[in-house]
Image (cartoon, rainbow, N blue to C red; front, side, top):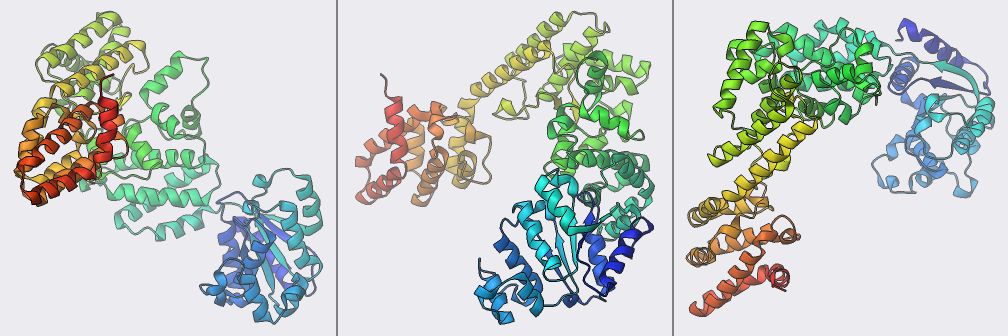
Length: 606
């Protein structure tokens, strides 16, 4: 049954259906996408006709691109018994329906159809999403009203149709009454809550109903579909939390408000992935204050739309939010880790010093001063060895120098940070969470926090130096890694396959690194020939998977001389083998001969 806000829609449709004569016009039920038009009308039809679907025909025009396709949809709606049969084959549905009505194809017209099939009302939904020309679609529907005397209800979002002269002219002829559907939050919310399976999430959302209603109203999207999707997404997020997280009501309330607001903004196309990734957080907010001439960032505008929510709250990182909102990724481990490091669950005493400095706006002067002193001591001791921590500390030092808190120029900070990286490299203490591909290192954030000063030339210089040093450190490690791989090939050939072949689902950091170029050719050949034939085959499969699709022309080009040398060495050793071994190894070599031929041509000196 309708709520008070849409009672006028229900009442008029009841009046229209009950007319004893042909009305001579159609009724348009209009409203924005997701407002609940379809839900309201299907509920109306169910109640009005006591769930007897034989009294109405409901046709969705969504994606239909021709009158023929609309014919098919009409027959399929009128005769659902044909659904799932051979009649669904393209072009067969309408023909099967005509046969069912005992009408010859040449005699087909809508008036003839209405004479044979007398429904009390015909409904055409999603008018704005029909891909056929709008004037032809309205002309088609008009035949039901003008020539068949039928009662017709059309559902559409007229805002998406736009100002079209043909539409306006045909609309005036066809539509006798327009009914505007309004979003009905309370009714829809109760229905959506009932469909949430996770008991904890369902209970918390019910408790937060007032907050959600307020945010929904402030969003002014009037879109119940977005509300439902957001609630389902939050259910998945809530399920990733631990009991100690859900027990902190302030934390979970903060999360719900932030996630609902960002979901509404993203799903409502008012904020993009890039806006969330780079245009949210303390750094973005500070930049707003300094650059008054720049266009306002979308999330700053959104922040004014929702006065009860801090849209720049750092309780979750922008990277995690993008994964959740844009890609649908709910990484329980990442969520828990970031929450544990947030202000709701971490104590300053247990917090890394650089994190306390980063949270300067939430820490007391005494806490900040103690943390800064400790961070600087750790910097002098070269205690930070992970790439993300190094970048955070360098960014913070640039920020503090800029504010006069650290008595250094920004140029001095750059020089000191570069020296810091060089010292770690010399001591072989430089670590990287990005393994062999420094390009994967987050430029703007790490550990759930955005890096200070990441948009400055000074920070970019430090970042570039760190990346190049890590790359060199990785290259320096190749000889040791090559020895490890050779040992692995001898002891556990399947593990060797997983480590070096991109065609394997468990492919590791060795896949994109030219580590094999540092493996002595004779050592590899001797180890290979000593393997059992079944293990030799696995090695060749690994190499084939490693080098196919042109990878020797890309990231593994430094291995070209190596693989050519291996091929030549194995070919030379063939004469030392038994006839059957010669045949077997020769067949293995043929598996990647084409790759080697290409490599020979490209590796041959000019």
